[in-house]
Amino acid sequence: MDARAGYTFLLPWLLGFIALTVGPMISSLYLSFTNYNLFDPPKWIGLDNYTTLFQDERFLQSVGVTVGYVVFGTPLKLAAALAVAMLLNSKRRGQGFYRSAFYAPSLIGASVSIAIVWKAMFGDSGPVDQGLSFFGINLGGWVGNPSMTMPMFILLTVWQFGAPMVIFLAGLKQIPNDLYEAASMDGAGPVRKFFNITWPMLSPVIFFNLLMETIHAFQIFASAYIISNGEGGPAGSTLFYTLYLYLRGFSDFRMGYASAMAWLLVIVVGIITLIFFRTSKSWVHYSGDAK
Amino acid sequence: MTTMATPTQSTPDAQVPHYNPKSESAAAKRAKSTIFHVVALALTAVVLYPGLWMIASSFKPNAEIGGANTSLWSNNFSFDNFVTAMEGIGGVSTLQFFTNSLILAIGAVVGTILSASVSAYAFARIKFPGRSIFFGMMIATLLLPFHVVIIPQYIVFQQLGLVDTYVPLLIGKFLAADAFFVFLMVQFMRNLPGELDEAARIDGAGHVRIFTSIMLPLMKPALISTSIFSFIWSWNDFLGPLLYLNTPDKYPLPLALRLFVDQTQSSDYGAMIAMSVLALLPVLIFFLVFQRYIVEGVSTQGLKG
Image (tube, rainbow over all chains, first blue to last red; front, side):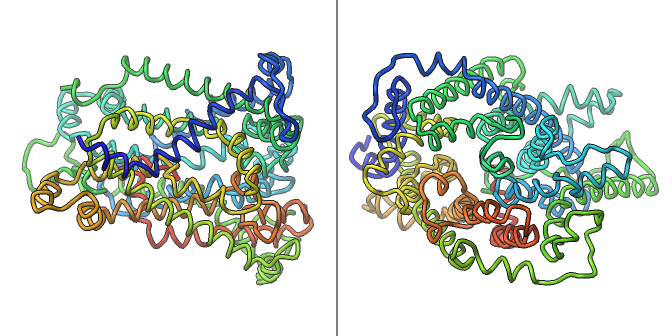
């Protein structure tokens, strides 16, 4: 035990943890029970912010938009990531090139530049619209069509399948080849091999990706802000949770209200994490207990 | 980095002559390989299309970007959009936005390297009471939606008169607030042999000596990954600057782009896309140069893009 040295070295993180995480968390919890506009002192209003939230149609809409995005976008992205990782998991030439090419979007996908490009590509007579009308599908611009904005955002996240794919690929390479050979000798086809070998052996990696991607998906901001000009339109169809939180807190200066939203997000993400960990016992196999 | 996940490539079939239920003819193998490359190349085309479209559009006159012209090629390629984009917006030149982005990104790299390595050393190499509790809390912050802290942080920085300065954007970097990097370095250090510090301690070296002359040089791969990712994250960050910066001559590129979008709307698409390309250029160069480090960093540490 070396308490003095330990805390001395830990100091930067510890200071940051207290001043930038724990302190602000406590204050935002307090603020969530108040009316606060940054200029007048906070006024205690009890649970009013929370009860108002559930009568606020825009809030409910932002929940709907975000949940839709998480529920459809994340599994699709992970399915694409796993499928491509399995395709690439071979000793063929060019694997490194494909891996890098597929990874690239993950590095830039959340940037303002890509949001601008996405908006242009899915806008009226943009290349997506043009390409689809070539096949006789005339949807017009997706950006201005409330029922097409969600597919557009889902495509944006699926396009960034590279990061989880690279993680899947590393996991796939850890699965001993003997398992597949033995299964082949027993006459197992590719489907059985997938469900009886790949899936259980990869389950810790699947779990990690699912957890991280889900939590990240809740926090999408820059793309939503840029594509909708910071308004969440058309018809509120891109009013993502964090965008609404930002608008409430920093445009309307209803900081108590925005704090309540932030805490609700923390609670929801916490519950989801807990559910993931609880249910993981039934489907995630760590190599220790597999043997 | 490579210590964690060394791909266990199976030995080539030729070396181990054993029963292979799927021994195929050379022709079948070639056919399979062709199919693989056709599928993979088609996928590459789809994945890279937005990037190619973006680059092609940045060289096209406005009239050709939308409209009936879907081909990437144009007979009217020119640098006009880039000339317009470099002029900047709101009376500030694009070079200034670049400089601002660069200051923020370098500040982020320096701060993160200094604070995360020191803190990680404490977690990985020093035994002290409370270590495992703090470690658990550090992991928990990885999962915490940071929106829960931005409002009180903003209030404090506002009261300190630090809004519209770079302090709120950089202070967290110097206090190891990006827990991912601390975690990455802890994992890396735990894989270094413990005999190293024991031997040094017997020779009378203290923690400062062990950290600076043994750990830091060995941690080079982790420090490189951290630098690359903290640079790129800072370069692409939008919410932080959006909250704290008000005057355009302090804007980094993502905010300048937003200003561009607001002010020109769809009137000068070409210049807007040219500026988007310029803003991504450093990230793309980084990616091409450090590709191996970046992809390895993701595959072994679960870093996000």
